[in-house]
Length: 396
Image (tube, rainbow, N blue to C red; front, side, top):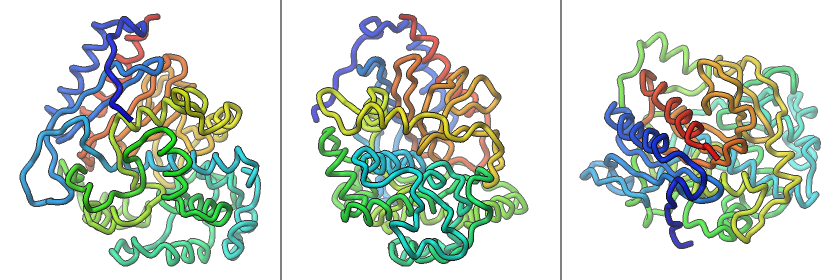
């Protein structure tokens, strides 16, 4: 698809001064050193009003090589925003009545029903309430690429709690279950299904799982931007997510991550594509002349399923969930989408990537960076200020 042009703020009822203030915050964020490469695309009423790239990146194809200027075509690993992409692919099958959100998972993956998991439904997996938030694996190259082995291990493990009783963010496991459901029901693997059912109809060049070797020169390496916390805190985080944090940070740039399919974490794309994806959802399943989901299915997908409550995996501020998306809230100190965003839906990735749709302000955005945090600081407040400035700019 030809790159969409950027319109003036006044064409879509935005205050140019406030939008410029939001744009300047992007430069401030880069200046903190925590965002080596940063790429942002904001749409209002379907039109691009802010499309910006700052900083430098090291290409995945040559990790020890020279830093290059970030462009609007630089691709990024979007981490957990991938969860919403995978969930949307599954919603295509819901739309066709090929399975139902309240079907038990073991109806389609029979071996999943062992070890007390027969009561887990597809809804539980989509809302992080299935009780199987961890995979319990070491992140070796061979393991990352062993799809059947990962599915087998998930099927053989016991749940932490009865489904629906608690919210426990499923870091990687839920994505594998949803993708395996697509394979069992449709016959296509999730990478092929996503490409043929959503990406190609909408004109995407990337935004799929991983990246082929001949495209990795345009993919930004993930960069550690601060020191690890004290060992006791690192150990506590590792125990909470059942993955060694140091080990996880060490594998992010490996070829295996870009060769494989990690449905909850390894979609690669641009901020414009992220914005376009959420614009399609904001339009209730349609982008320009192409429809990939019914309006009714998007409404079902983005409505609240889990009210704000403690997350037993991350122990963060209470989070609301729909069927595959994080939802905004009224003003709280750590509101992920900014102030008064009860109807906003989307997802974060590694706490610094954002993809979202704001129906009240008619905004769809992609906010991608190569920097991964270990010790969040003032930059978190700047991101919230950026989000709030965008909303304040919507005056008509």
